[in-house]
Length: 59
Image 1 (tube, rainbow, N blue to C red):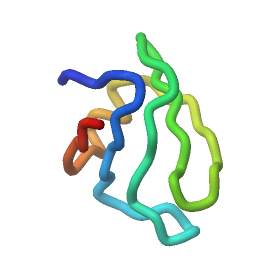
Image 2 (spheres, rainbow, N blue to C red; image 1 turned 90 degrees about the horizontal axis):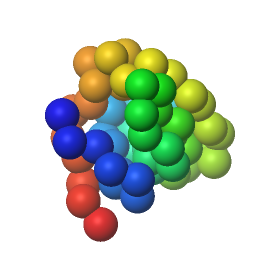
Image 3 (cartoon, rainbow, N blue to C red; image 1 turned 120 degrees about the vertical axis):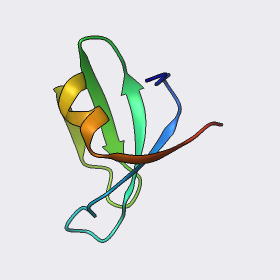
Image 4 (spheres, one colour; image 1 turned 180 degrees about the horizontal axis):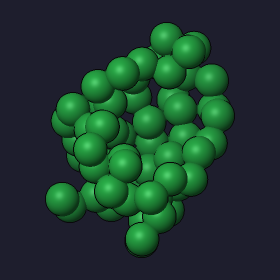
């Protein structure tokens, strides 16, 4: 899956703040994403992030 810094990921499940969109801050074996609703940042293994993506919005 082609994920680049700056992309917006629309996830299958929503964050507790109500947003389903996350901005990619860092890529590699782990991906750092930031919730566009509340600004919470998470670093997670690429495999887990790719499994939960519904769509990718390119800038």
